[in-house]
Image 1 (tube, rainbow, N blue to C red):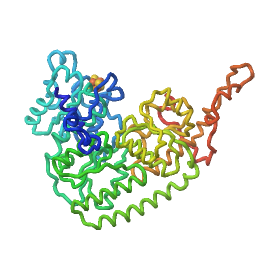
Image 2: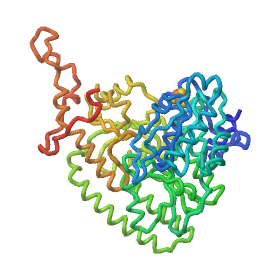
Image 3: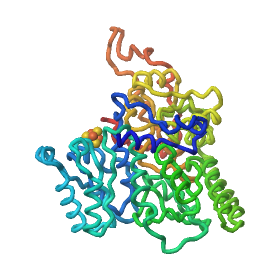
Image 4: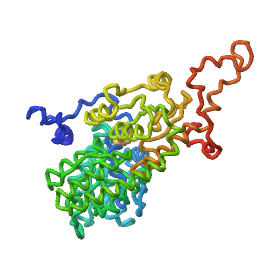
Length: 497
Ligand code: SF4
């Protein structure tokens, strides 16, 4: 019952045009889909909540459940910190069979006490999991008691794995922040240039590619939710003048509810690609001016954009000839399904298809705007279909997450990780240059020349090398080698897995 009400609340998105078109009674039901078997495959709700909140770097993240839940979710995304490292320490109550019989609440309370005594963090986040939810442990009550006893915020994150998908967990993590953190402290001072960035997780340090741009304009990131986040900053986020939502799929509920509760306007934007980065800066500046910031911010923003765009294009220019006409298959999700498309098209790459499995209706509309009606949008694809598409579409490279890398490798296709496990930051003007550089390195890696040569077995008795014709032509076509330096690239981790 609790989850039904929570689900309806979390998915009630007043900013969504589709939602607004519904009748009052339809809207009350929210936008949740009926859960089906396998809904948590690829990440459960707990995993989603953990992913959304673990980048808060100075708090202790305590997982109340069996140790495997902690092992499943610990630091799997390379969220970077500019200071504290406590977020990377794994804490779990590691419940046992006896706790299942007698209940795990005492153990949870003792664990919170131990963490506070040993590490003295500004707050402890306590995550519910399947087993502890099923045995009826009331983490809200334990957290409330511990907060009162130790005089520190102990925040319950009630998102047990069985509640639904990873994305639902992202939103439940956001709800915990809304209910227990935002609005609980006041900032030391405020300025007309204060903003929050929501849904940016600082993966591989991406936040640090955009923060200098805001700094140059005198715009202060009051809090980032949650990349490189600090507890006190998030607690005072309600005093920001504008919210920018970077990943609308995961945390739009924070922005809509902050607008309702504190009157903070928001917009959805992207930091991927030159055009989108400039657009994000313009929209932030415009909204800040509407909220009372001095008007000269607009002119300063335009000057910065002009200088940064010129610098980025100059750095991309050497790659254009090498990458012109290269075809890309993009298997990613959410905001990246359209923002990376736009970024790649900017540098002359052709997109043969993009996945929309994790995209909202708004994301799909944007893809159509960018790619036209011929956009090849792929909803859900088996590995076999992906392999066939790679071969049929004659792509030169696949950009995806780590799980599909082996399909690309089997198809002898260059592959680049653009999802959460990526090792390179691709945000902002710096990021697009980095992305183009990495695509160039992957496509022109000499290893493809080697792996596309048929194995020297004698399968038809006509001598070594027979059977070469079984490979489609595009698989044996290797781009020309540009220079020794360009080709001197080591294999990526996992290539030989
Ligand atoms: S919360 Fe549940 S689904 Fe998620 S990792 Fe733990 S046991 Fe598995």
